[in-house]
Image 1 (cartoon, rainbow over the protein chains, first blue to last red):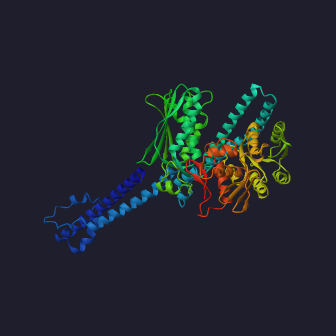
Image 2 (cartoon, one colour):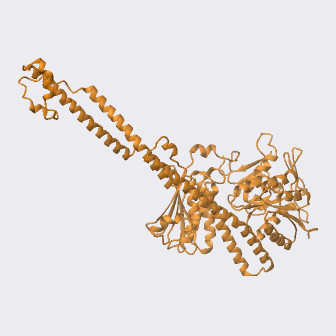
Length: 398
Length: 233
């Protein structure tokens, strides 16, 4: 229950208690007055005039009534104890109605809040219509407005995504023709250096189109391939070996500083690509740094596998850090190419595996990207292995 | 050297691309026929005497994968498919349906020719006699590499050229594991790429076509982190 609920509850209950106390005390004083009335009679007022004498009494509030009377000359008859049972019932009844009322008002607001939270987190599938069914007030209107907004946003986002996907897809055909034409040119004028430049640019464009398609698929939630247990140590080693091999020509190194074994349930190609993108990004945007380090660790208590990619480059201004994961982000530190799509794809891929990716500047300078993935459940690690008829390798088998 | 020019059939819905590729392949010494309509392409592949068929799997109407299935129902002609880069599902489905290999599109024509030649090299035996030729036997499996013929327990087995080459490599090393990289180099004519499932898909298809060993185990086994092994009885 949220704070709003407790506030409503407190106000409603206090109001009810106030009302009850006021009414109860009114009765109390009234009773007190009636208790004294027979005493008056006892003091010799004639029986017959009793009734007409009553209305003559001033109708003022009971608080002022007692002083009007003369103090009773005798001990007043003992007042009964506070009636326990009725008091308790009243209290409980007021508590229950206050809770129900507070719940009635606070519940749609909680629903609204949850819906807005989901929308802000990117889930536009939430609708309030079922939650608000049967209500007809301003809160229900607010819910309808939310549904309307979510509909519109969803349509426009889907449209944008489809457009991106279609444009990228359609670019493939002319690219393929261009590539064939350049191939023909190359066949005829083999030593023309411009043709290899053209080929290079076509390959780059093709890669970009491929990345765009990949990102739009990821954003639409289309995931290719089957989920299987992934040996993360092996996967990270593969990424590091490849990246180190490719970067060796420029005299730089990618080093696996620390490693741990762990199994993650996922799509190996996607995770491989994501980690590779992060390592490539470090190599590209810290060109002076001689080494890029990769570290893996297992957080057994939290059931998480952590991959960190660190460099000793210039780092990135704090304000630009969150922008790194948006497509084609251009910060002050980025070169002419910007950051491209690599980190955006990496983030989507990691998130599709239920993980998270963070970036921050290191205390000693340089950038640190941390990927956190949930470890696979133990039963998945053993039973879920698709290679059921695998022979043990001679090295590890008994 | 070749008695006649190698006949290639190109099936793709993009006519302009077909014209360009055809020019390129002719220049490289192939004899080329193009089809931009997949149904006609299938008929042509089944009727004509082609050394290899290049098939785009992303085609309208008769989908390229359906075309592939139809060709494979009647013929083991080598098929190289063109797939969209990054589209793993098409690629794996295609290999499962019996394509010999794939090239991601767009590709440079040079890549295409290299891949074509790699497949042709193993399907068309070279002029000099293979020293290791002759019959290969392991248990119920018999292979005649020169005739590209295989038998399992006395029954002929119909294998695509890639499946045949993979099985041949495993048979030559029966009883020992062969790494995926070696298999890729020797049977596909290219190095093994990380996460490339081609070999797994081809071999699982081979496994389906062959029976099991007397003790019920499949003849071909994956060896963890090592590759594949043909079990000796």
